Image 1: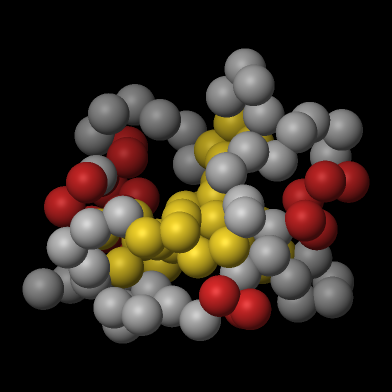
Image 2 (image 1 turned 180 degrees about the vertical axis):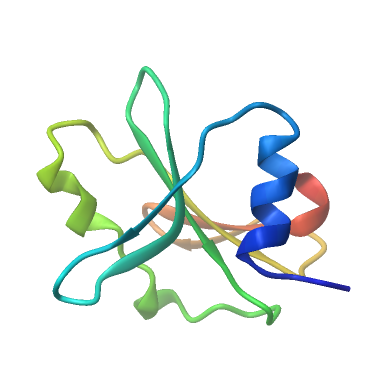
Length: 95
């Protein structure tokens, strides 16, 4: 199974959702982000099934005067799992 940013991007593009990649000069990044009327939704793509909670913090996106909504880590899991107070792990099948 191909599992990377391009694959996830194709899934979203097929539903006409504009996606963006983000990386700043401090090497902080979100694999994909999209914007809604309510704010910015960050997405991270992971090949494993158990993402580490301390590694996912999308607060660096707050500099863009729009609320940073709940972020998602897309992984090879069977169910939704809260990673921390602002990030959930989402199964690839949910997309």
